Image 1 (cartoon, rainbow, N blue to C red):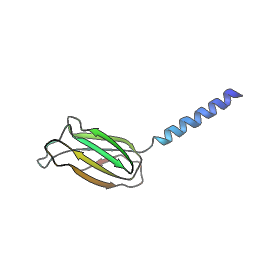
Image 2: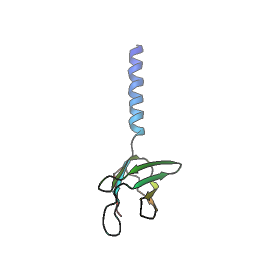
Image 3: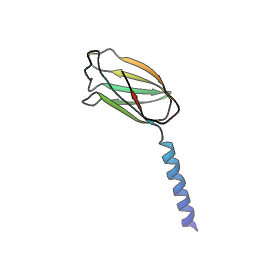
Image 4: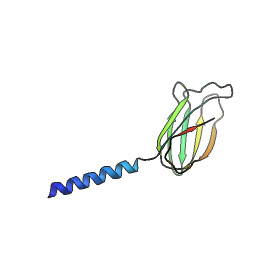
Amino acid sequence: MKLRYFFIALVILISARSYAQTGRDVHGTLIDSTKHTIPGSTVKILMGKDSSTTITDSKGAFLFQAVKVTQFSLVIQSIGYEPVKRHFALDNTNDPVFLRP
């Protein structure tokens, strides 16, 4: 009987954890005005009081996984460029988002 309750509790915990990780992927590629990619740039996503930071790869691409909010800002910084802050408002789906320049 105790084993049965353990498995029920385990299934509930796994389900809650899976639900908590839902969200959409937000990704893009940084390019400058000459259409060249900008590798090694810092991209920070601001979501209310939360934030996360990543670095663009060798092709200027970045990815934030499982973003749970529909409104956020991106702050982009790179050596030799002025910092940029942009605000985004998305629909309520969990479809991945590719941000265009």
